[in-house]
Length: 122
Length: 122
Image (spheres, each protein chain N blue to C red):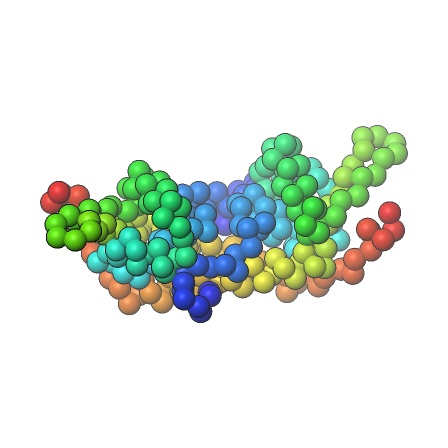
């Protein structure tokens, strides 16, 4: 959480990671640092070919992942890996996410819910 | 986390909350269950008029927030509040976020980073 003038700006939530599909891909790649095949990644994250492709290119463009395409006998296979810099940045993003969760837990415990009423009154 | 065939699908991350601006707005409103003025919310979340407006209308459309516009002497003021249902759904989303964080921590601790190499080799 940002401690400045806008306490809820969450400017540390790097946009590149804060998309559900890319969050899934990065979590998966952190758990498999030696790399995963495109198809394994697709199954683990429940993404279509096109979506996974789009996310991987966005992540590769900012140096978070690298891809290796191996051709030879059979179908060509693409392997994807998170880079050392990508891992570091993703873990920093996760720390920020953790502070959002802590923040909400702390604040929601202090402030009990209010019964709905406005909509009925107006 | 989803325990099904696609362990990293994170289907519980409701899209309505998983946008940095809306995440900020909801965190703020959970902390202020009696409601906040539009301008207070704007300052706390560092959002422009147009952006905050857009997010609030998206949240109101699915019943997460309600807005009350008070006119009288001086400028009209809009007050925004999270609904009981919105609060419940947002806290469920936060629980899912927490499980993502736990998951990454557990998996990154098990799997040390791999030195970069592919890019240099290719």
